[in-house]
Length: 559
Image (cartoon, rainbow, N blue to C red; front, side, top):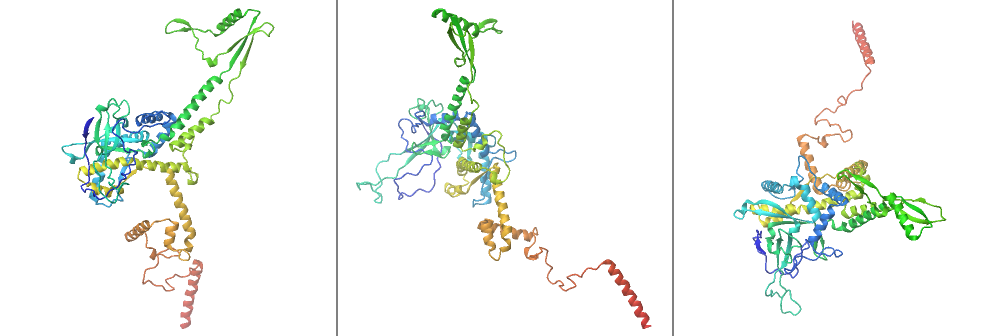
C-alpha cells in the first residue's frame, strides 16, 4: 500500500494533557474502531445477500434503476435542487455571522469559486442524486503542495466504490498515571484513546476495499483533510455502517417486483381461452388411437410459414406451454368429435395489491402517496386542503439540504484556512453561523404561512376594540400576531425610519376616529373656522333681494 499523502489542518493551540477520558469522541458516520487486518469495514448481512458496503452501494444503484423507485428519487431531488435561469441553486447566507463586511465578501467570493470548481450550477442535480442514492459522497481536494496558500486548485469526484474511510485506534505503550481515572486493580490508569483516521483509495476495485482485496497493493492512503466526506446521516449502530435513504425501501421494492412478476405469470396463464378437442377414435387399439390423435393434432397445429429473408419454408412451432389446447381421445359410443372452450381467468383487472405496494414503496422513500397518481394535480387552494404528507415531505427535504450542505462547509473551511483568510480557531466559532440558502420551490409551506397570517389579521380586527381595555398592545403583538422580541424591535425601527422619511404619516398627527390629519397648532378653533351651515342657493338669492329692498326703504325713510 502506498504511503499516506495529502495535507493536514491542525489547530495551533495544543490540547491540554490533563483532560483525560476513556470514552472516545462520538463519530456520527458509523465508522468505529476498524482493525487493519482483513477487510476494512464490517460485514453487512441483509438476509445473507450483502457482505460489505461495496455490495450494498451496488444494490442501491440497481434499485435506482427501477421505474417506481426512480420516480420517487426524482421527486426528492427536484424538490431539493431547484434550477433557475438567473439564480444559483444555492448561496451562502451570512446574516447571522458576526463579522466585518470585508470578511463576508471574501467568504462569498470563495464559496462562488468552490461552486465553479465543482461545476455545481450545471451538475447540481447529478451530484445531489448520487449522494442521495449512494448515501455518501467523496471529493478529493487538490492543492499546489509548493504554494498551499493559493487554496484549492481542483475538486474531483470519487466513486464511493473506490473509497473507504478508516478509523483505527493507535496502540500506545504505557498509560497515564492519573489517579482520577483508575481501573479495578488500581495499578494503572486508563489512557486516552487515540485514533488514526484516513481514507483508502483503490483505483480498480473488484471487491470490497481492504487488505483482502487482490488490488490492495495498488491502494493509496489519503489524509483525512484531503478528502471531503459527506454522508446521509443514517447509521446502523448495530453493524457500524452508513446507510442510504433507499435502505428502508429494499423490502418494499422486492415485494413490488415479486407481485408484478406473479401478476404477469398469472395473466399469461389465465387470460387466453383454451380449447378441449375430443377426438373420436372409434374402436381403434390404444397404439393406433394415440397415433391417430397425434395426426389430428399435427394437422391443426402445424403452421408452415415463408421466411422472406432466407427464402425458406419452415414449420413454426413456437407455442407456449401454458397456452396449449387439450386433446383427448373419445371411444365409440360417445358423441363423436367435439370442441369445447375453457373461459379465461376472471378479475384480471384487479390492481389493488399493486397499488398497495406502490404506496408502501413511496412511504418508505418519504414521498407523498398522492404523487403516484398520474392525474394528481397541484392544489393551490387553501392550506386546509393541503395534505399533511406534503408538509412532512417539505420538512424532509429541508433536512436533506442541511445534511448535504456539510459538503460545502468542509470545502469552504479548507479554502479559507489555506488562503489565511481565517484561522482554524476562528472557523470553529464561525461555522455554526454560516448557513446555505437553497432556492425553494415547494409552494405548500408558503400557502400555509399566508393563510396563517390572514387568520391572525382577522383575529386582530376582532380584538382591536378591546386593546387598551382588556388587552395591551404588547400582548396582542406577541400572542395574536406571534411577533418575537427581535421582530418587534426591528419593525419599530423600520416604522420610525419611514415616518422620518415621510413614507407613512405620523400616527400622532391623525384623528383617532376619522383618520384625517389634525389641524396644525395655533390654528383658529372658533365657530367660524369649524364651518357654516350651507344654505339653499334659491333661498340665498331671495334673501339678498329682501336685504337690498330693505336697504332702499331705509334710505327713503331717512330722507
